[in-house]
Length: 458
Image 1: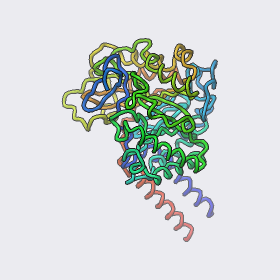
Image 2: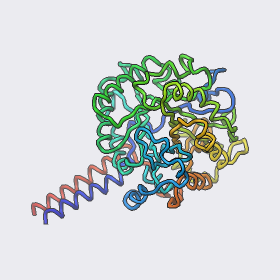
Image 3: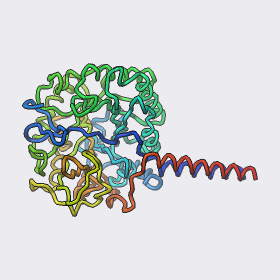
Image 4: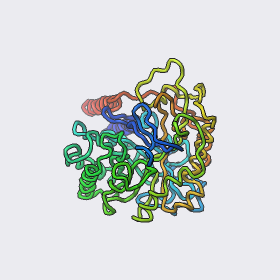
């Protein structure tokens, strides 16, 4: 009778891992920094301290995982796996041969929920992980590992690593590099392929580590060396600036001055959003070449010139709403999905375009047939799926868990017939307080073990 008691305790612990780990938010982590990743049709704008565009004129695990992993997107059979590279599964979610990933709102849902909506896992799962001298525990990765491992055979993990103290050897230390290398090795050992997006958008002045090319390259080299010495063979380096429409050789805003060298870069990516009109406040449709015209110089330099796979590391076409009367901001660039789970009562900002139109057109530019033919070296795009209070507006970046018509379009275009409507966030959804999940997990696990020991002694 001893074994069943032990087995019960183990099962209870595994159940707790499934429940709590995917939702854990690290106390010191920033799921998303205030960034500036938006291409619009005109000039650079600075709104509430955040720049957006730079150009040359201005500066369901338990029941559904198995079925989902056996499902392949029906929209891409003709070119399935044609651009598979560096851990991408040939059967991964894709359209016109371009893989599709997502940066979920980990506070409320994870890869298992995204897979339920699409009927299959996305090919890339994004994350935002902060490391600093004060906290290099990387506990957020640890809490996300169980659910990532569920989809390891079909989805690459692409964490954006945020050096919270900045870059350069005095800010990003050898100990921090070693901590990341050790964590990436453990992920690889668990079967999880990693695309490390270190100090993403490094050419943007909105980041504490931004616009410091020499210090950036110094820290990149330190981390790359540590990862290789650790033997994390399934960890690849995704070098990813913010989109820039001016001279790529601009020493501060451009790309080339930050490039650490072909031997230390596996993929080259961009943060690239469509933000609407030139004021970045209205809902308008992108032109047919908005994406291609801005991508071309980056593509020519790093795919044609350096033979690197190209990735759109994060993207969306956020839909603008006016802030409702009495709205109390929690701070610029904060996530508001819990406060406004249903946006139907909000008033759209000006411009006249519908949310479905904007996001449908932008998805077509990202991975439509024309783009696939023009950029054969473009291997993947990832969609940023959050709802934000930003610059005195509410901005809905979401493809799923938001507007129903938009979700239906994405689900039927990219997913499979087994996909299910999200139904929005559960009415009882709450953001877990920092430390809540780990404390609860630890306390209940301890109680389970204590109880089992007591049974053994009695």
